[in-house]
Image (cartoon, rainbow, N blue to C red):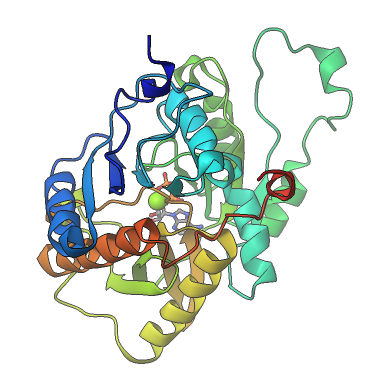
Length: 333
Ligand SMILES: Nc1ncnc2c1ncn2[C@@H]1O[C@H](COP(=O)(O)OP(=O)(O)O)[C@@H](O)[C@H]1O
Ligand SMILES: [Mg+2]
């Protein structure tokens, strides 16, 4: 048996610079992305395909020089495979180690420290725990929570949402202490599955404008007007471009965030209140790239920037932001 062929089956042909794409339930991005990489990369031997991973072998080289990962948050084996691949030399977009560690409360602290405004935020102890956890496990937890102090800080209305997660799942707007306690109680219920979620409570920014930036390669930032109250596919408001001072501030703050986070693929969302941009959601390392959602012009921009990025990585013209950054990189050859 040829163990060296273990990673997904085949090794890359010698000299080839192969880009693997990993996606979830999205149909509009994959084929045009693979086609664009193939067309633009042909001269230099770079091409892309849908990656297929079927168990990572310690001693097998990786098939891909670059992997664009848009699904490892849902498929734990992919994460495990990609961590090993990163150490073996594959450029993984985004850093699987950092993506796994990242959380919304941490991001708020980081934003504040790099000079980006964020809503007042509290991370809350879980409402409940898996069955094995009992009082003895929770000795370091202050109980009951001082809800009045928490509310005095955050104010009302407020938003309660998971510290990790996405897709607007389990996001509650609360207008009173009663609503807050009701929502908090929901987070301990069976609908949250086996592991009850850690939630954050956040000042609700009553916005007069809203901007979402598609961020690629930490340098290319596309600010788009966004209406979070519209039905899903109508949220990107292409008819009203983001311009002037608002555009400048969005570019500046989005760049600061993606540079600090090291995400090569992300969206950064701002609620605008009285000229101040508040970063609301910037933990989107597998951002919505669907053409019907971001619309034609932005979709073409995404294809151009994403293909340029992976070709640069495949040819060694750029270094991923995370390579060499973890302590263990010092000890590997
Ligand atoms: N602090 C806030 N102030 C105002 N609106 C918010 C706030 N937090 C979340 N929202 C609204 O709720 C939506 C979902 O929250 P978000 O943090 O993006 O969660 P998810 O990660 O599930 O997408 C946001 O797009 C925004 O419209
Ligand atoms: Mg969001």
